[in-house]
Image 1 (cartoon, one colour):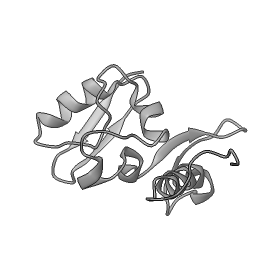
Image 2: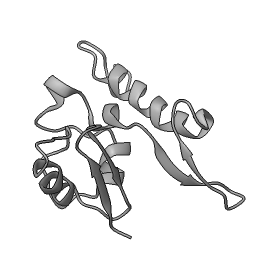
Image 3: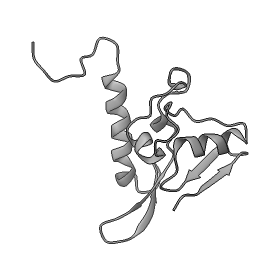
Amino acid sequence: MKGLLIDPVARTAWARPGLTAGEYTRAAAAHGLATPFGDTASVGIGGLTLGGGIGWLVRKHGLTIDALLAVEVVTADGRQVTASPDSHPDLFCPAAMRRRRLRRSRQPGRRTDRSRR
């Protein structure tokens, strides 16, 4: 299932499941591109991205999920659709909501645990 298509002119990439951050990073670097990934090359980019993606470039370029333009999903009825803010936003929304939660939880002075003192 692994696969990667990079468009250096548009500065975008379409990554298939199973690709690791290291594989993606090496391929993107060959085109002079970078994505704000974590610091572990063996991590799968799907989980890394949907988990937020904190890495060396986060302060300058944001979280990995901030660079997410679209996702390809299979619906409950078996249809394969590409979801983005403009196409099937209801399916793209969970990723965007995760991004907002991550941003809120990392605001200075904001408690991230739910325990009471």
